[in-house]
Image (cartoon, rainbow over the protein chains, first blue to last red):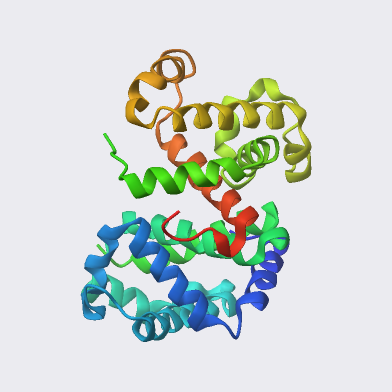
Length: 141
Length: 127
């Protein structure tokens, strides 16, 4: 699991995102849909070509959930349980898509944080998001 | 086989002209070795890889990263014949180095992050 240093790195990055959940989330989704168009099948409710408002709304929702995960790194299973149920029973997102989302998240962080995006931050954040995705897909079977 | 559209080829070529090969290659390989430490298995002869600082400042990592990016740039000059351009390297990585192809995806992903880090907002989703 995450070391104390890795948790600090995750929290440090989150401090830079907090307050900008909508714009970060929208960019994350835009990058995901542009680079990996097959992921759009899971967002049919946003329409074939989601507009900016839809991306901002849904992006904010996703990033707020990430924020919850950041604040409860010791207790991910409990706090993410409703989302895990949602992904298992309703959304049924193929687990292979989570690394794609994580990659896009890293690109968004890198492009916004640039010089501040250290290799330690990248490693910690990758480990953290992978942990989140494991919890979200745990109830699949 | 992946086929790039004319727009994609143009976007890739324009980015290539702005890339500092010396810096980007070493950083990409270094970040790969730190973020996905199991990839270190291919670089036993590279010396000190014991910490992120050691990896990012390792001369062999920087030199090899530069070599990798130079090969990719060579590929950019042969976008219509990528198979031919990379045939020898492909054989090397398969028959001698025995690199799991999954690792190429990881390095590619890290390289994209490094480019995003350097170009910031200029690095559009299309690029």
